[in-house]
Length: 175
Image 1 (cartoon, one colour):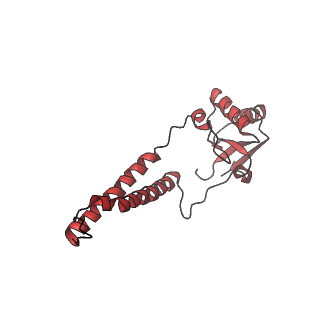
Image 2 (cartoon, helix red, strand yellow; image 1 turned 135 degrees about the vertical axis):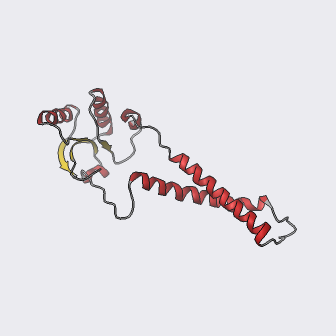
């Protein structure tokens, strides 16, 4: 979210009431800026029209990179750099490579996915995220609309929407 954005948001006490409000907003072709919930709400993504995350693709790519790194490094070490026969095993003993290969696969995938997620979401050191209401992370559900450039009648229509859909509170905040 950019600075100096005027946001009109309604707080709901129950996720079912909030889900019905989101459905009604979609039926009325209202442009929802975002929906905030204190926990994941099953079925909200399809209603909002959000597609499935592609983070698992990044996890696969980073995991494959970890697998290749481990396998190629051990191959180089045990066949070229330091060829030592351990207990009669050949220089290139693939079964002996499996545990380290697995560990580096998991390490690369997990670190890569965290870094990718933080980058995509704009999170990181020094980043501050504006909070509409402290109770959103506790027990309230929020539907927010960006009202920059809206006329008073459009804002009144949104306020009526909130009162008709069971919002317990309606607030405006500049973030």
